[in-house]
Length: 411
Image (cartoon, rainbow, N blue to C red; front, side, top):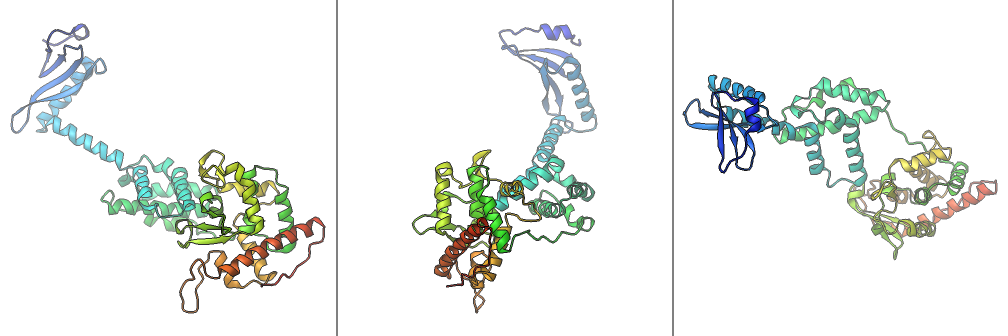
């Protein structure tokens, strides 16, 4: 006889577990602890061995819902399919889908491939994934993503005017897809066929101040900056060190060699994957010593205001320059490198190979071999001090209202 909802509701525990039959192989198992489980007893369609299938727990699974599940299982049996095996297969498919989404594979790729990259590159890549790709593709099974679907996401990026970012997002997505293909988790790379639909990459020229008079005004403006001590110090060091913006903001206190008065950056942080030395002029040491009471207890010289476990954002110096009246079309964080490159050459007559080496560019000797990080180091130490003194001179000349070109000359 079929059960009623009232019978199920009033089923009480006994000294031993017992069953209440509902017909067609389904019953309610009532345990001595009071738990009530729906079960279906059936025979395998091929070997005829008796099996049981869990249909749910009462009251989360009502009598009506349990019967619906029973009827679905019986239909599978009529089709020659074991409902227990069918459930396991579906669970395996669901698990594979859950672990084979674009975001799951993307994070796996990031963890596997980004370990040897610079911190700034890892930050930019993860930010691109989390801002531009995961929100729209993250929950999708990676095998289901089509070229038009990916193109829609990339066009969204282009729509906000970020042409180069869209190109970078396509390249990053392609790396994720190819990583999935190599691991047997996908069979094609949709990014490989969408490139022709994107706008061509823009030639990127970093805006920079490259004349003595304008450089002097910028230095005076930096001295008058009213922001946080951290950003102020970053602005002061940017022209003195003229390293890449990512290298500056990710600088760690442990990388400062106070005894030898220099910064020693490991290869993992450098674009050219070679360790790099930045000699510290007296003026740079003074800026760092002034900042040390504020951030010296942290890992980073310029920690993020959102948490000292990470470094200052790439926008901090840019926003500070903008607040000082310097837009992106006038000066950028990267522009301090161009400023130093130009003025060291044209105004101080420093040797080009010394400048290029200090910029951490690839510099080769007459035999085609790349210079090591200590090549010309004594000359570079002297050059960095002359450069810092020259900047002081520009600053003072600007304050006096009489900026002139001063030929220090290489020594």
